[in-house]
Amino acid sequence: MDEGDPGDEPGADGDDADVRDGGRPALADARGVESVYQPAEDSALLARTAREYVEPGDRALDVGTGSGYVASVLGDAGAVAVGVDLSPLACRQAAANGVSVVRGDLLSPFRDDVFDLVVFNPPYLPTPQKKEWDDWMEHALSGGEDGRRLVDPFLDDVERVLAPGGEALLLVSSLTDPEAVRSYARERNLESERVAREKHPYEKLVVLRFVPM
Ligand SMILES: C[S@@+](CC[C@H](N)C(=O)[O-])C[C@H]1O[C@@H](n2cnc3c(N)ncnc32)[C@H](O)[C@@H]1O
Image 1 (spheres, protein in one colour):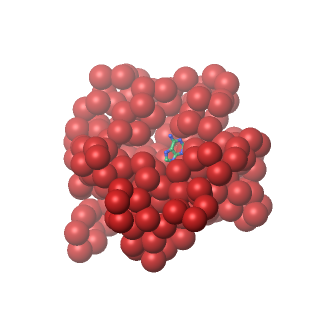
Image 2: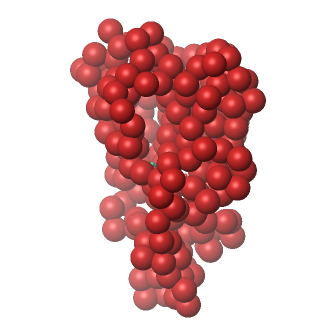
């Protein structure tokens, strides 16, 4: 695992870490939350759904693992689970929670054809471009202008890392237009179905399952 040096990355640069942009508080501080995304309704829905698709002995990857919660659930179900996250703070927390974790960008650290199951709860809140990247919590939450800044590159590459017969589960919100996600995936030869959904006050959460066509 390369945990990197949080000192040269957003959100961990000492005295001014809590105030950015001429006085705007960093998102994590404004929200009064930690700098690592903690399991919430979306994490729980993805983890519950993933349990239905994982078999003991499966090789499973939790992309954007955060605290490592979903990877832990997959491990408890008997999978050989690994997490990946861009944030060194998340990697540290996942490792402290007993998860094997790699620091990296999406699927790029991994070889072809290795995983039976890949799951991803992406940052998905639609966010104006100028309001991003000040701290690691913004990386955990912000999905760019359409909420899909990481969903699209994930779909571009996921088939590469899937073993024969492998599948991927992606958490999406009504805020990020699940039908647009499915149509993007179709253009990349990924068949999709909705396998779980849950209604919340401001959004509907959906889990999409993808298999190569
Ligand atoms: C919504 S949080 C989900 C955390 C955890 N999987 C859960 O469900 O509780 C999204 C995670 O993606 C990570 N992330 C953001 N950009 C990433 C990238 N390019 N590659 C890998 N992980 C990334 C964030 O650091 C954050 O931990």
